[in-house]
Amino acid sequence: MMAEESKMNNDIQVIFDSERCYTRRFAESDLNAFVEYRNNEEWMKYQFFKELSREEYEEILLKEATVESGAQFAIIRKADQSLLGDVFIKKEHDTFWIGYTVSPSFKRQGYAYEITRAMIQWIQQQGEFKIMAGAVPENVASVRLLEKLGFAQVDEENGELIFLLHHSS
Image 1 (cartoon, helix red, strand yellow):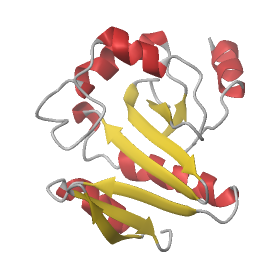
Image 2: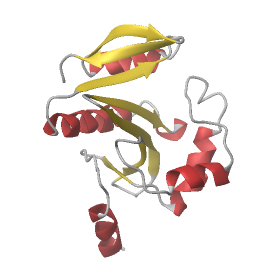
Image 3: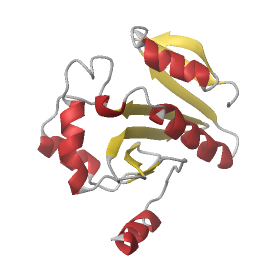
């Protein structure tokens, strides 16, 4: 299994690695857990990309995606290879847009901070890019996370606060 996992990681265009977790492309084996938290109405009330069928998620997540078209990656806990959540990254001209979702089973354990910080570090290694994210004002946990990472609100669009990274922590 390790050789297969290693080969799989080599096929990934982008991988974000932190102390306790990493990202990789989605696998068929991730879908049940993904569908469970993405279709949890209460947990996902502030999120987009939700309430789809397993087949719709499969179509989107298992196809080859690029950073330019927007890519969703699975967050995997190193200790037991559990799916913790997912991240989204999209490059538009001189800007990278990022997003993150952690399963309610793993909330408030620092995983979103850890993997988002790893994404930011990877983007910064790519050159001089703006890093932006959005959150609805009611999603206080997400707003606080972005502020902790060094983001500041710069705009508001369609009811969503728009944040720009000013410094990394």
